[in-house]
Picture 1 (cartoon, rainbow, N blue to C red):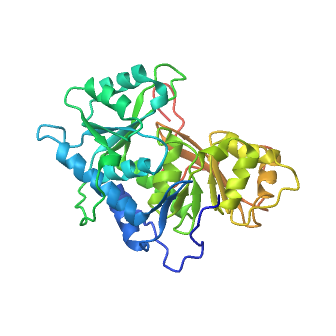
Picture 2: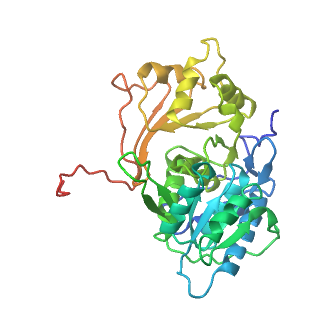
Length: 365
């Protein structure tokens, strides 16, 4: 079923992302975006929900108010909150609500099982566990094992119109904890700062041109680091997030999703993006698709040229190299028709405000 989509030519001003906003906070930037877009502008769309920026702001503020209420006087100034959620719009409510409250989060994947989740929470003492109705039994069991741990069911919170929150938090305050892959041993938690999330959104705006007129795909849960750009990056630039988990089953289903929802930015894993090259040569271009954004692997020249046939003449391809520890450290961008050397894309260049150094075992350049 096709969702109603906001028109790309939206008749209100762009929301510039200036350098000085990198020294503020995610909550401040999101509040500015909400003030800049009309009340009916969509933040999130899936097969069951259409969530406006206004409603998302109200719901996130309700969570922030609840986090304020459960915080005790003897707790750390910036406590950690655990998120155990299904992949729907409540994830975005939690992302923004935790930032509005000045806390930071650790996102848990229910598929990892009770034992692994309990291990994570023993390493990172939490203020409370934020969940939804379906995962409430698992959340209750985990919370019971953590002394003093509160429990918040987002579906029980009232969404009330409230006044603006006073957000006093440094860009160097904690934002989140993401875990390494464990490929070299036990997965380790990596703490990201508020500045890291702001930087990702800044690059989305100034390097990739993301704006309130864009419709971007979200193809992973927030437990995965690659979700930052299509979730937080989109919300801090006024774009609309689209999600159809059932459309990830095949290249044909993915293409049909991009077509029906008039997606302008296809943000997905390298494997899913590469699968589009297997579509028949007669497949029609997607007139709204201006940017393909992926990362983690290189692409052959033949694959990139094939992807450009699915885009308008001005289409752009972006591949990024990143890690949970360092964020984006290299990006390669090319437009259709632009010349570049080699049979595989190069790593590209470090983005703005990023320095890459090659060092020896003594950490000397």
